[in-house]
Image 1: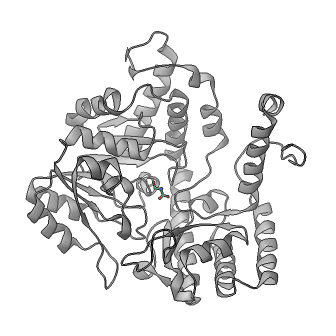
Image 2: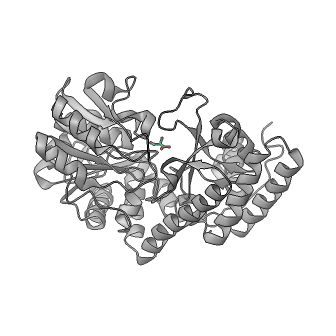
Image 3: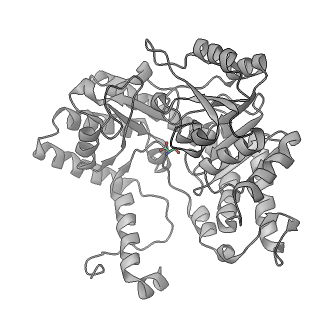
Length: 424
Ligand code: DSN
């Protein structure tokens, strides 16, 4: 980062600070991960200089012969990875991918069914302040009170009542495998199309360790930076018959120039996910989450659905005498970074909800396994049970630091330099 250091030392110092934070803390936010050095290099290339509105071979700008290669590689690899008939790799994010599918499949005001944000769905699944909720007539399904699993009776009855044009499956805070076939049956019965937003678990699908939505869904969206471990961004996968509508909905429908450096990073990410090692990684993500869940349960922490099948755990912090906010603060002081989260049927407000969400994708990328999860889970329970015991929190902070030192993050060849003085 020599140029950055010389020309903009304040910004350089912030980046170095972030590097040190990532090295020295446990990233347990379920939607975060570490990209490989190769993905990061691709994203840092001069492909960022290029305008390329349009698609490979059909651009509105000259000089696109090399960025065409990058985008073609990303498209071909995404299709191979997911067995998809078509892939659009241009969405800047998962939210952009969802908005493009809505534009392709719906007219403003059309009825749509999506999972409630408070039960684990995403903002773009019809939240009233989000463009999805403003433009379309969203109705929300949720989970059952007794076991917090998706209530398919409710999905079916809402579908029969509202006759949605589109049903959205997929979630951001649901710790169980989603049986996409159940959604497909309901969609078929009422004549709706099915969108599966696998932003969170797309990497698990790619590795074959989660139910695959591709055979049953009309459209599938994902982010590339969560379990898929690539650059920040989105993709849309669909059947060939939807290709034209989807491509038109991304550009010119909802976006202008694609981020060619990020698309290059996506191409590298998909190649990495095609490697046999990636399957082992994805299985370990799940194994780690299950071990962590067992430690939490033994420690008296209530888990939504009683456990996990995937990469995340949603816990009720009030079961241990805290709130989402106080639990998050206690863990941050130990070097464990998580996020507060609303839980189904929460009686608290979103700004300080009852829940906390944990994930294992980033720790697993560092090479941590079940033994490390047992230690981390024990430290977390200790900290949550005694959040005011400064000596205990400091002891755990030291243990977290020591563990982090044994499992470096995958940034190749970076010098870790002290930042003292750089912020002046
Ligand atoms: N905001 C992301 C998450 O943390 O789950 C979803 O897009």
